[in-house]
Length: 452
Image (cartoon, rainbow, N blue to C red; front, side):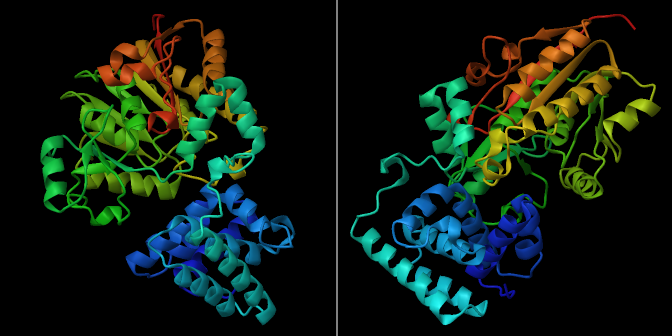
């Protein structure tokens, strides 16, 4: 497809590249959308179209199949993605006039030098759908027979066996909605009330979070995060309430003690832990990937935390092999399938396979083994994922405890503020789901009971 820079064209390019490559959508957004000098409004629309298509993919195809003699699975990727982008605008984006949705989508195909018969076909399909939608003849996803969940059948079946149908329906519904932006107040620089006041002064709708202290929800915010007041000054970071609560599972970070974030990534939990350190406590954050490590350092600098955290560009395994230091607390926020954050990364539902979970499990257990060797007697090991799957969560913990009998599982309940304690299950695991209005998460707290 010829590269053009209209939001519809960019969205179609991203979706075609995703279809052809099988890679995560973020890599294509980075290359095709974020790698261009675009007006912020165009960039936001392109991203919204891409994520909207991925959230409503089955429903869009069900609607399309009713208006095309050629079934969606028989269409070429470019045609199919253009139709999906067009239908999404017609059925979900009320602010875009139907005429603009149709005309701009067809224009994107013309710019891609598609033949006239094809642009005519797409134009005709979209106009029929626009007309019937205006007449109220197209039912929403939940009213179709059978209802459309916009998740692969194997994943829905798996969740229904584990969670039951009502919770599965609630999770799927939450995953198909645009999540609100959530901030964590950098309390080293500003109080939550002061940050709320600052946002309100700029006419930004903001409310306190329900579960995590210092969290602020920005419902419906679609602007650039970097344009929010206080971003450059490091007054907040973007972090879901579930991830904020996970950082509390280490407990108080005592003066004179050393702590380790073994899988820091971009530093979300490292930044939070750094703010929780008592005076004289120290935190080391590990991240091997050069791009993520650069962003980790930049985030630490922006929030004014470089004097509290020692970032190291290395793996937990390599760090474990060369250090003699022992830590009072270690967080292992392990790489995982991400089935708990589908609402934020909607392509996960289409990219994952059931065979992925055992593969992640092996890596996760290895990380815990490495962390165990670095933990001091009496130290705390916290294991977290953003997965809903037992193979990556309680089964990993069970395997680890069997292999390391000197560790004991402790409940997470008393470490969380009162409103969040309902997110801890009978076994003591921290386990919110998207049905709670949070990212799906898992957290386990284990204490080493042997002597050095």
